[in-house]
Image (cartoon, rainbow, N blue to C red; front, side):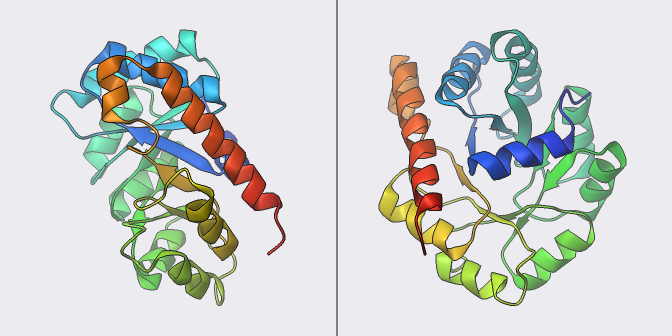
Length: 226
């Protein structure tokens, strides 16, 4: 069962402006990454459902972080259907993210009062997801759906929409500034924060430093006048 309610999750994401995401098949490596991100100030982490036995790694990660990083809100990503979402909810997922919208997953998450962030690439998809209760919609893939200009175009007639682009977002001021000036609620970043070379070397400090710098840049960009 989720340790954090969806209001706590949404407030954390909207305040921080960032959800890091990663997958690793090794439970110990996953724990190190989660702790490194938590040390950077991250409050929500997405573990992606991308490999065989990913649920076992996820379950171990949730249990370990309840002790090692108790304030970290851990959810699951790359969820395409309600049965998969239900499996992860039974193992402690605090939120569910999908590459696409799925009505049955939305209903399941609403029934359990767990946040669901579906991936959308058109205004119709975004509107449908919101009709099913999505507070934040994942703009995916962010770099090919039109980028910041698409965000501006969507928010002009729909200022209530909260978008979270994933894909093409980098921990660089010149990249983050256009996204946030366009009006995104937050961004998702994966390999830009959790690099493969750092994982192989066990360089957890670089993950912490890069993520902390990304959070600082987001705060800086948000404080700037448009």
